[in-house]
Image 1 (cartoon, rainbow, N blue to C red):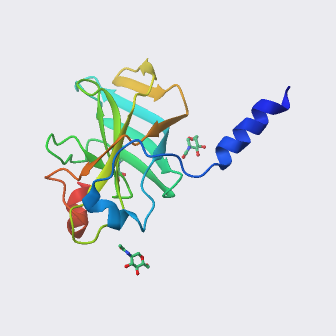
Image 2: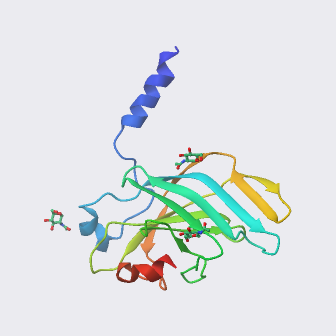
Amino acid sequence: MHGIPVLFSLIVAASASKALRYTVPSSFKAAANNCTLPAEFVVANFTTYTDKKEGSPGTVSFQFSDPDTKIQTTCQHNSTSTGSGPSKNRYACDNVKIAFVYQTTGIAGLTVAERACSSGTGTQFEASGLVVPDLDCTDTSTGTLCHAKEKSIPGDFESFQPVPPGVPTRRDQKNWRG
Ligand SMILES: *[C@@H]1O[C@H](CO)[C@@H](O)[C@H](O)[C@H]1NC(C)=O
Ligand SMILES: *[C@@H]1O[C@H](CO)[C@@H](O)[C@H](O)[C@H]1NC(C)=O
Ligand SMILES: *[C@@H]1O[C@H](CO)[C@@H](O)[C@H](O)[C@H]1NC(C)=O
């Protein structure tokens, strides 16, 4: 019976892109016909560092990848980064199509957002999803360093909405980087 689990996982891995966990608004369907919508993602090497003087993590870093849209990028914020979005806690990754918010209160965990199919002039949409890294932390003399116990954390995009106000669009990418 040993062969069965192996065979099963091969079939799963080979199956076509998985069903989306969110609904695409009808106004976006035409644009979405031509592109790959974000369905799932992987967060790797998630690390935070909280200085003793700070209440919330001053440095957050991880690698993001989306196996369907093939986007792979490094995401990080540190003392020199400026947040954007309504709560000023949203940061762009090196690839500006990806942004993230990491919170230890409220919607605790790492929310990642991926811009869906550049729709040209119309409203820009993004898919977002949440993962909650299970952290292993070490206190140092200056702060607390934490690593996710899992090297690689899979997540699903579960909602689809216009990019929030206050987040610059592609035209002013420099600002959107923070
Ligand atoms: C889809 O892509 C084709 C070829 O790139 C283009 O001609 C067409 O206008 C696109 N359709 C939409 C709805 O964006
Ligand atoms: C995670 O970190 C390890 C060790 O630094 C590195 O080899 C690996 O490539 C990183 N993973 C990703 C997805 O970048
Ligand atoms: C701080 O984060 C930015 C991205 O927001 C990155 O470009 C820069 O290299 C980081 N600085 C350090 C010292 O890691």
